[in-house]
Image (cartoon, rainbow, N blue to C red; front, side, top):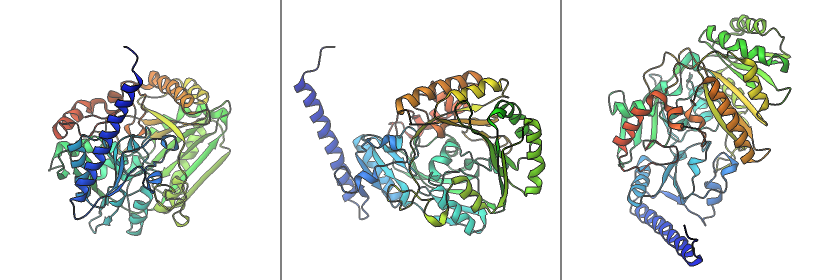
Length: 479
């Protein structure tokens, strides 16, 4: 290819700028036709530098074309109409925890759904939850109504992305995935229609929304979940000597697999020659019921923990404990995007694999964790109610656990991603080419099959049916 002349490049850039400006003009024109204007924040506006931020600091240089702060489903419909008419990239954002930064993408119209934050806990035990609700706000509202439900552990993660990808949490074995609790949802599909989806209305789309990943089929505006009566939970942490790591990895899958559904645990492992090693989790019962189970784990490992903690707590206190924050002091609320809180942002990259079979070579797995620099590695138990869950798009019902590898950016993002890739590929050799869609890795080989497995064909059919014009597209999108 011949070298591009300076005038050609300048012309190309100018045309792109004009198209960008025209698209934004169309955005403003369409919004202006409404009696309820969408709040649109664009480059150059005073609020833009904060409004464009997601949770991860490494994507701060990304520049969406505009951020639409919506306050109603009608606002969302107008945004979808804009994207459809102008062929402008559109993405929804709730908590902004997209691992690849897709919810703050360059040039995209970001539909910030945080204004859709209504929570209505009904007398029949169901809860209608707006698509902009963050997890800790949901937990507080449920606890105040004497209810609880399974979800994640990060206070500022949005309910939307968590649910749409499945929703692994600390009570998963007892109560299932977050998406298993979904009764119905309302979604603006790519044709601009605000639809109700359930087991009896658009059942194919309802199936897809439970595990088919965020951003693929439209923008959800609200969910209805089945909840449980709130109960006390016993949280626990056992810290083991570094030397016990191999033994722990060898015995944990069988111990967890034979434990009652009430017990959901996570193995946490640091990196380096003497890594931090712990088993923590949640028991839907009393300390007296948990004690013999933990005693059995210690016996199997063959090493006494250096510390051991078992605490019976209310549902809300347990969620605060796992989120490492307190509702009353602002540490559970985001410090970015006008959140007004004290929770700091994240600076790390992550990948995942699913633990699909027993760990036959715990020494090798221990070496992967130890040799992945600046990493923290988590094995989150599945099974129990997850394995018996309803027919949804979540493809990993038979997995024993999920494995997540997080790497800090201490040595730079490029180095972290290289090291992450080595760990991911080694884990793939051991447990199969799979992963959890809520831990999206932009370099995941054969990502569609890895994340969606046996559900992939059905999900693509649903995407083609509801989004034939590919309004919702992104690098790892199904459209």
